[in-house]
Image 1 (cartoon, rainbow, N blue to C red):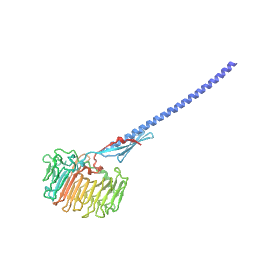
Image 2 (cartoon, rainbow, N blue to C red):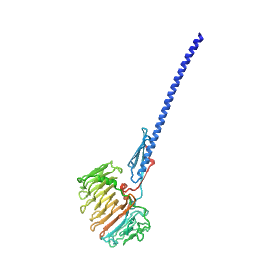
Image 3 (spheres, one colour):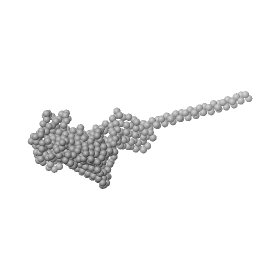
Length: 485
């Protein structure tokens, strides 16, 4: 009896032990499962973070590629469905890219380094054909026109006159009736019978370059005292691509309507401000921008008709901020006139990083002062000094002049002097690379002290080249600034 009871008690104890072991194993299994599940979750989250980072990095690379295309843009995105997305923005030379995968986001921020590829504007003067006249006699040696580089002796071959014209019997002619120099200083004597430039340095190794396609006598220094040389090969520069589609579409969207007169100060914001008729800016008005206006988000005044910027009244006109970059674009369907009225106008100041585009013509008259700005037109650009002002020079332009037709510098008999520093181009390429040449014309009177001087000065150019020129810009990330937000 005792043995049987003992055996029964032993079996019950074993059962309890087995049940306990089962509970322990179940607890261990649940714990291990939780640990494994947690580890799997952590690994999955880490994988999602890594994939989100790689997507953000892909967005940076996509934006860099896009910024180096013919039509640059830093605003790019990618959607790969279950594989995630990225979105990249570009502002103030900074790229910000956000990658997203499986609900996890990573953000990369990097600054960019931008260098503009060499263009025709870098050599100061570049056009299809050249002619100048003195008292309207084209072959006169006394045209009082100086084209030079104004740079140090180490910066040679920076004045380039080229003619790519290649049609008919006149192909390739380049007639220079003024003189083309490459010197650090030029003094024009007051005696019109001897307009040769005098310098303190005669260095034959510093050359201007004149090149034309014509095989025999392609470059003619007709009666000039040029110390440049005739290039046997082209400079390697060419006219820029000229595509104003973006500007023209904005102009086309403005319906016909009432003209406006801005006679008080105007502060512009980013985006377009439309004028349905003509726009007149007068009475000492100053046109400036608020701090939200940037290089990638400029302020644009889009005008259906003509633009008259009139400095007759009060203290002249200023377009742009007093200091810094303004990023103002004035786009007109009609012509643009700077100081068109009055015998002794107040100055019209065109400040840094402002652009003026006309689908027609642009006329620049006395006491216009341009500081690293851009004037360009589908038609002609005429720079004309009509009165001998107390200001010297009468017209002073630093920046870019571009014409799809011709550029003309004119000094009337009662006028004074015109000085232009920067890059001037008449002629362009179209989308398929065909070159269209246009002339540049200089006209001066038979008067001492009347002078047209064009200086090849890359330093005078605005840093913001108008995008319609489609000049290649090399954009690369500055890896030293690569950071995650």
